[in-house]
Length: 75
Image (cartoon, rainbow, N blue to C red):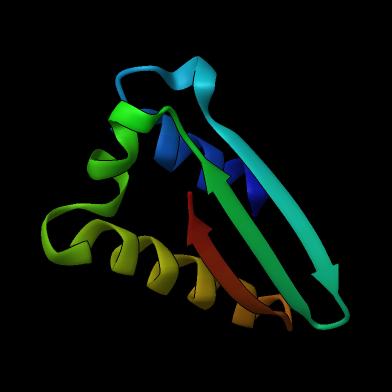
C-alpha cells in the first residue's frame, strides 16, 4: 500500500527523489504523511485539493480491502 502511494506521488512531482512517506500504525488506522519538496506541494494538492482528495479516496479504498482505515496527509 505504501509503495503504491509512493509510486503515485513520485509520478506527480518534478523532484521524485525528495518524496518521503512516513507510515504511522495506530491499530486498524494507518496514517501516511507524504512529504515532498516545497515547490511540489501544489502539484500533489492540486487545484482546490482535487488531487489530494483523489489520493485519499484511492488509498482509503485499498485500505478497506485490507481491513484498515487509511488517512493521507500532505506536507
